[in-house]
Amino acid sequence: MTLLLWAPTVRADGAGSDTDIHVAQSLGGRELTVVIRRVGPVLGPLHVDVVTHQGDAPGPLQLTATSGGTATSSGQIELGPRPGIYSTTLNVDRAGPWELLVDDGTTVARIPFLVPVQVIPPWKKASDYGFFAAGALLIVSLGVALRSRRSWVALIPATGMVVALTVAVTGAVLSAYSPPPPQPGQDLDPTLDNMRDPYARIASNSLTPVDYSRPPVNLAVTMHGQTMQLGLIDSSTGRPVDDLLIHHGALIHLIVVSPSGAMSHLHPVRVAPGRYEVQFHPAESGTYAIAAEIARRGGGVQLVRASVTGRSPDAPSRVETISAGEITTTIAKAGTPSTVRARFGDTTDLQPWLGMTGHMMVIGPLPAGAATDIGDHALVAPVWSHAHAMVPPAPGAAGGQPDESVARYGPEVEFTYTFALPGRYKVWVQAERDYAILTAPTEVEVP
Image (cartoon, rainbow, N blue to C red; front, side, top):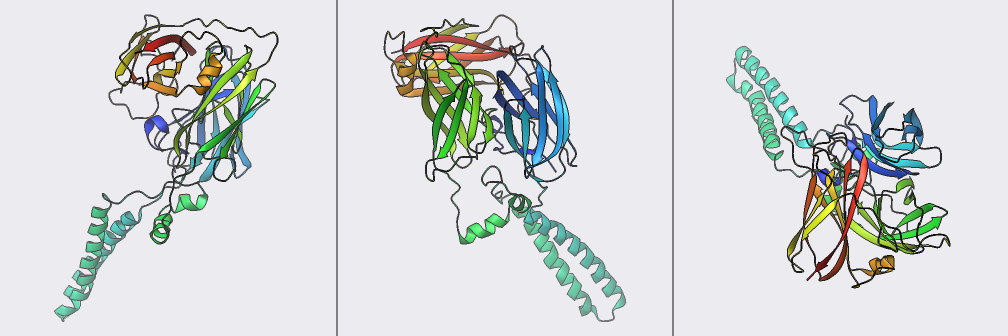
């Protein structure tokens, strides 16, 4: 058996059964990356790494593997003052949907993953059984031919051998052209039954075709103290949405723009079906524009917006942002590709964050000359974009998302981006070095 997250096999949008699983979690005041290492063919150890970053507080984390609501294995990680990788080993003892619980003592993040059954395709069964039967019937036909005085008797097992060989060859040939079945966790809500026999859906689809697409998501955001609560609601039924896929290393990418134009890139944790939480302290008075980038099973990538208001009477009206890098741009007219380059220092030691060497957020067009109330303007801006600088392929790499421990990229990160409309845009570029998330902001004017 192998381990698979509830995600597509496309590298940037999920993890296949032969790769590790990386999930960013803004848990409490920490920005963590939880890495579930792939499980081998035999059930047993489940290796989990937790990556901490600069500014994350030390302390214990309790990790628990659960299946069907029952905890089967638990372990504790003691996070140290130095950012880096901390590990523990759990156990999985059965196939099916699982959850990894990450508990910091205040909030319990619930990360869904699958331990699927090794399924043999029907055409492989037909091919294997056919070749086996053909071999057995060949021996029988030779034995009959040697012992029987009537030669025609040997034709009976020989005919069966030809039929079995035909079935085997047909199965082997068709295997290269047969489409895969609907994938539990990718196309279907996973259950133990459809994981054991995903091909049963093909037979039922031939009688009653199924549309795997799903409706858009509505986002409800509320603040309770310094906890931002997000409710994901199916726009068709009103029920909680609990079918998010891992998309670029997170279940949700939450972009928050403050009244002065500061940007926060957070990753809320799943605390219940359709419910997510993240710690957020509004340091300014005014409107904070919010956009949640998600990928729903059968619904594709979606961007849903909301806002919250900072009301603290002691909060400043503006917070200065210190740039961690230098940005140069070559801006073409709207509708034509432009180039944005961010340089973070002079050393080639950037680390991949969320599977990428760089992230770029673009919001606009914004009113010319507006220096305040950026959150209000961003909330109604027509363009919110999240672009990436991909990790260069390494010779001999097996695929999958690279670990954050690999520090060999940069120092320059380049993006090619087409601004759809003329006007003023806010741009932020993010990268990672020494387990610190670096942010470089700028503004561009698009003719």
